[in-house]
Image (cartoon, rainbow, N blue to C red; front, side, top):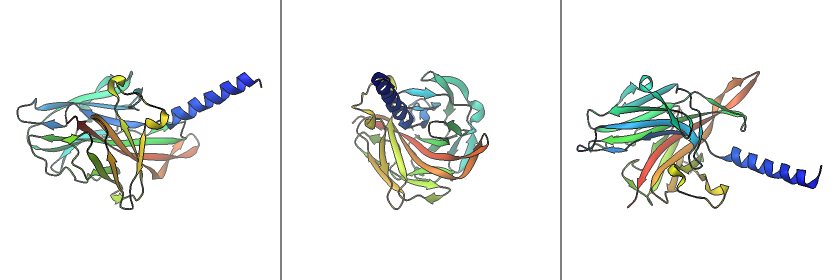
Length: 255
């Protein structure tokens, strides 16, 4: 093989592995995380699947389930979703009207997504929290999801520069030393990076499953705790692992 062909092959491999290393994030983004009495009494919600910093979208099929939990009650919202485009890819939108004060957890469970670059399926159970009319009781509740990040910092009303803490759980059990990927929703591509290492921040939980991250700037930040499920999914004639992602999106305000 000629030297130029070898060089081209090398850089093609580098680009492939850089692309495959980019983090996937399920996304549930409300138009606001705090609804007060003099505000519009509803939020718009956008559901998507993407590389949020690079603003590269992937098609999200209609989720298996999308619901809101508040004060111990669960309301299915899947039927309210309408087709939309986010980052030129299939996404979904809806709106939700608040009728009483409370903490509202919006949760998307997608169908498992096959990722050939990682030779596994991916399912990111994604959550966003909205506080309505001044009530903030229960922002740290466990929802009983297959996997979740239980917030230890109040997940709304935060300033950029605050730390965010959460406890990683799978089937109600905390996961020591879980890996957590953190990424900024770079809407409008306003931020540039030094190199690919800067796209996705990575932290590890401690022995109690608790992680801490100091957010450097305002905007939406996604936290994804990644663990392998204790079951597999058949792909063709083979059983393939499933990456379970517990994702929470939190907005940090400029001080």
